[in-house]
Image (cartoon, rainbow, N blue to C red; front, side):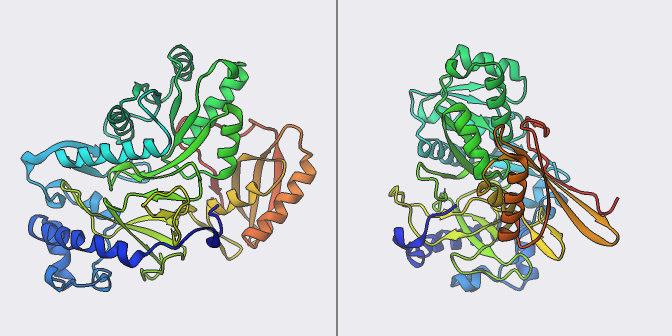
Length: 426
């Protein structure tokens, strides 16, 4: 959770935005001239680049949404000429048809720079050995982490996903000091290392996890098992990939690279731009991207821009850790619930672990919610369940049934863990 406001000076966002605005204007002119997609989009909205003189004017530009990137061919979307495209990446397609993203040489270099900056914020140096477990190929993560690692001068160990036996063998043989992956796989590896009594043989000191929203309870669990410091890296393929932001050693928010991206927070229902500090949906504009720049891209991620500066001294502003996605939220008993609120309740519940499942059913015409959560080995299950029910009521405002189950009894994943099971329409 973010620390209280009085501890930190406020950021001068007016000054920050005034430095970003000329770059934004250059971007708008460039996409209007070179992208048929954006020229048609702005023309349909009756907007000419020269008419955008203020941030209020900029907020009138229609949003870009993922469905558009799926529907149209790359030739219609891209801004750079064909002979300038040096690489293609694609989203995972877990929620539909994958989006294809073209990169120029400068885009690749910018991605590498941002990733190296993230790893530096996590304390990675040229003396580290970085074990990279995300996927390679069309997905951005594997090659992105490798290029950032190599730019720093650290040793990259490009393992890719899965094959836990080999992951642990290489971790021991090469004395890996940094592990990169999803938090779900980080927990899976940590528990396997514990099960095999290898904790005193590993050399890890740092973990960098992303690709899914995860909570403080999971951070604490992985950190305590492996005795490492863990960092939350943020990004999405449509923008560049993982690496457009990360938390620092203070862990009070995710620093984002405001020289590469412009962030807005909107009301996900009305599209209205919200003031700094208010929670809503994150909208991103790429400031320097060439292959396929995006204007006002709706991420569906729920967070807020933090109004204060971090005490680490970084010049880069922060957002809160992601609370969830607007399309992941579920409504139960008339209340809209985000997965991050479940994490917040668990964080304050003694005896509760990080792993949980939410099962939604309808009985006799009424919504029912069951939270199945792993308990710590020494915890009293009845007391843990009662405390969890109380915290859910406090954080979310609803009554839930809570079942505390033994540790490691819920499924583990080498990718992203599915936690919400809505059976009301079955």
